[in-house]
Amino acid sequence: MRLLTHNMLASNIKGVKNGFPLRLEPKELETKEVDFNPDFLKRMFPKIEWVAFREAAAIVNVQGLPASVTTEMLEDEGFLKAFHHALLEVHVQEGRLICPETGRAFEINKGIPNMMLNEDEC
Image (tube, rainbow, N blue to C red; front, side, top):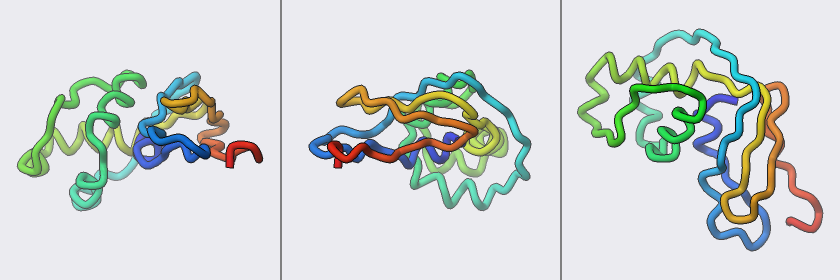
């Protein structure tokens, strides 16, 4: 699971009002090289919740991302490369995502988060 995916997921358990961001508990990480595409990064940037993204990046040991960002930073190749690495190249292969409100754990196996709810959670 890429950090891009993590930034788009939320807990949808019935009654949960604060299901984002899910707390990331990685057990196994992998880095996979991905072609650098600045245009893709510029299109994705407005969709990213930066504080949650930066916190998740720190959990998976990606350093160097600024605490706050501006659209002007999208013209800085150094920033774009750091953003690219954290967003697309770091993969959580095994671990868990934890609902911030209920503490419910969603397992990540072979890079795929299992967000299926039990019948009583729907």
